[in-house]
Length: 421
Ligand SMILES: Cc1cc2nc3c(=O)[nH]c(=O)nc-3n(C[C@H](O)[C@H](O)[C@H](O)COP(=O)(O)OP(=O)(O)OC[C@H]3O[C@@H](n4cnc5c(N)ncnc54)[C@H](O)[C@@H]3O)c2cc1C
Image (cartoon, rainbow, N blue to C red; front, side, top):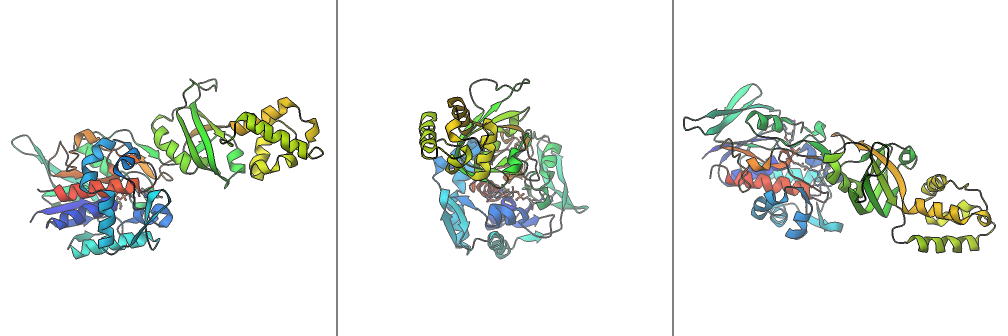
């Protein structure tokens, strides 16, 4: 029986410890917090979107960074394996819109309880309040470097294998504050540049703050880089997409903008133009016909009253303001040019993005331990034998929908089940 130390009691660490214990190893799970799974607890707004029940191809289309590295770990422990395991361990699941899988109870705490029960049943030694400070590695006479344990709470702890599952940098109050990157670097690993991802954008204008709380379903957006003169550079947008977005006190967020952040996080140098098509289903011509019809029906009314149904009231106020038309102007006095200005605002409402929010708000960290230095089947370091990495500490990230947790489950399971083979 080998002794295995797992560092970090989050999603990846708990799964790694379970997989290693199932292989009959003596497993010690070290977590610096007072309890396991503090981040899992806040996932999915407290409901924990554990995985996504889509097919394999679709699954990988949602992995933003290094999908190919994940093939082997995913095939070894897929979304369906996770689904079956959680149910077998006593947690009934349900699948919602977008194939998102949640516990039937809608409680993330039930996910943690289920994993903890499994850990205890398998005899995993759980050490809470245990902060790992350092890896204990040494060079063997044949030139290979080997991991022999960790230093935690000022004491040395020997092991035949160590799995680092310390998470990334996002929501550091949950315990993930970047120790794993330091451990990796100290052992000669490269850590790719780190960025907050799946996070909202800051905007220069005050408009989003005035519209705070308004959510827009079915809008199209495009994001273009701006040059120093404030002009859009090139014709090809850096991002374009369709879906739901939200105005916030700092700028814009919501599913569509979180997806944009995952693709733009690594090149946020300089300002960007966000253009929102508020009426993507209607062409300019169709909108013009609709306006003319509204004008015809309400000839004696003010402009604002005549076009009242077209947008939520507070948003309409902003679009009218941006179009330069007085809201009280009689419809019969609106010129064609004014009508066209208004349509231009509806089809391309502009905002200026100045940056992303930080790690305190980011759902995940983009970047991490370079996967070229990790064996994709086993998660073992190619530089230090008996040292393994799993979860967000690796340079892997995905869109929202249960995919990031599945990265943690799959890589955690790969590390735990291959350690000391
Ligand atoms: C608000 C929010 C909502 C989210 N919702 C979802 C969702 O619904 N679905 C989804 O798929 N993903 C979601 N995610 C992302 C998901 O939570 C992460 O991808 C996942 O938790 C990463 O797992 P991990 O085990 O690698 O890291 P973590 O869960 O961060 O666990 C790392 C653990 O290591 C411990 N640790 C760190 N350093 C040390 C040390 N030196 N010694 C001992 N212990 C240490 C930490 O205390 C922590 O418990 C969400 C993230 C956030 C922030």
